[in-house]
Image (cartoon, rainbow, N blue to C red):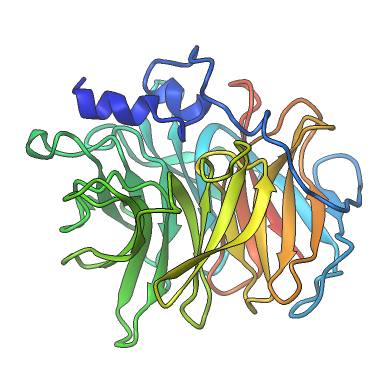
Amino acid sequence: MTEARGDFRRSAGVLCAVASLAAAAGNPGCSRAKDAPGQTVASSAGGTGGATAASGTGGGGGAGGDAPYAIAPLAPAMALDATPDAGAAYVYFTGVDAGGRAGVFRVSARGGASAAAIAAGPPLVAPLGIAASAGGGRVFVADPGAGSSALDDAGALFAIELPGGALAPIRGGEGHAARGLEVVRGADGEEQLVFSGRDREDGQPGVFFLPAGGGEARAIAKGSPLVDPSGVAIAGGGDVFVCDTLAGPDGAATIFRIEDGFVSPFATGLRAGYPCGLSLTRDDAALLVLTRDATRGAAEVVRIELSSGARSTVATGAAGHGEPGGLHRAKAADVFAFVEHGAKEQDSVFLLSQ
C-alpha cells in the first residue's frame, strides 16, 4: 500500500465502512456522525414492516413537501453510496461483496431480488461515490484509492457501461482523490461530472467539473472554507451544494452553496456520514440530506427548504442501525436511493419515494 493510498484510508472523512475496505475496521476515529451535535427541528414517522411511511412538517412545493415519503429496504449489503438509474428501475451502489471485492452492484428498485455485481475488483480499490448518467446507459464512480503509481494512487474516476459492466477510467479524473460526484448536462448538451476532491497540483480541497467523456478538470471552487468535501448536488440554475463533514467548528457537517464561484454556508450542525448523502428534489425546492438521529441511534433524512431553510425529517431505520452514507435522486423522478451503514449483516440499501 502506498503512503498516499494509506492517507486516503486514514482520512477523517472516511468512516467505518470505507475503513473496512482498507482492512482497518477497528479504527476508532472512523465515524463522526454519532458524535456531532445536530439541529433537526421536527420529525414525524409511522409504519411497520418492510416499508415505512413518513412525512415532514415543513415541506412545500413540487410533488408536495408535505406528501408522505415511503421507504423500502432493497438489499442487505456492505454499501457506501447508492443511486437510482434515470427512470428509477434499478439502484446501483458501491460497496464490498461477500468475497471482500470492492465494486459496483445493482438491485431492482422493486426489491425482492439479490444484488448483482456489475464491476468488482481491480482497478477498483475503494469506490466511494456513484452517480447515474442523465440519459441512462452509464454509471460513474469516484474511487479515491485507485490510480497509477505515477500519481501516487491519488484516485480516479471511472465510467461503467450498462448493462454489460465494461469499465474505463475517465481521462482527467486521475489524481484528484475524487469522493462524491453528480452528473449534469452542460450548455452544449454534453454530460459533465461535478465531483469533490483535491486539486492534483496544489492539494487544496474543492469541487471540480470534468466532461464525462474526459478532458481537463476545472475548479468550481477550492480552498477555504472547504476542508473535506464529499457529497454534491446541482440545482437546475447551476448552483452547487456540497457537504463537508469537517468544516463545522463543532465537528458537525456544513453544507455550502456555491454560486458563481462564491462559497457560502447553507446549513450547519448536521450529523452526516461519509460520503455525505445529499440531493435536491426534482423541482429544486428542497435539499435532502442523510443524517443520524442521536436520540434514536438511527439514520434519518433531513429535508431543508431552499427558500426558507426550514427543516423537517423522515425517520429511515431501526434504532441502533443508522450510520448514514450516500444518497442520490433519479434524474426523471423524485425517487431517492440511500445507504445506511451498520453491522455487516445489517448494512442496507433503501429506496425513498413520494
